Length: 87
Image (cartoon, rainbow, N blue to C red; front, side):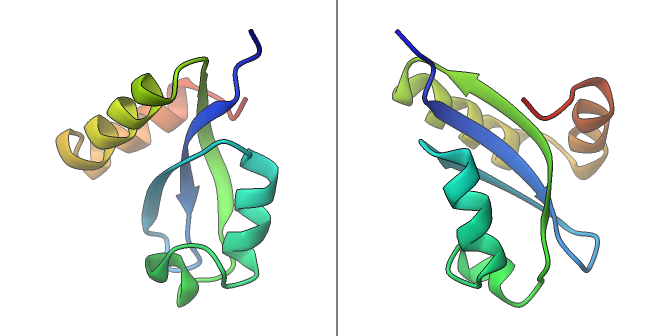
């Protein structure tokens, strides 16, 4: 089975980070940069993909998104980005 669930971190133009989930990373990034993504990123364009993880299971991906958003500090997210590379 092909992995088609992604957790991603974007770096916004104002240097803030945004974490999200999608089943199509390329389309989601395009939507964010067209101002059709999340309300948060709409006013912080352009955004760039700085990190992603892929999962076979949607529930697992969404759980990971929640963990990154709500349990990691900005510093921990930056460390995650530094250690990993967008997939």
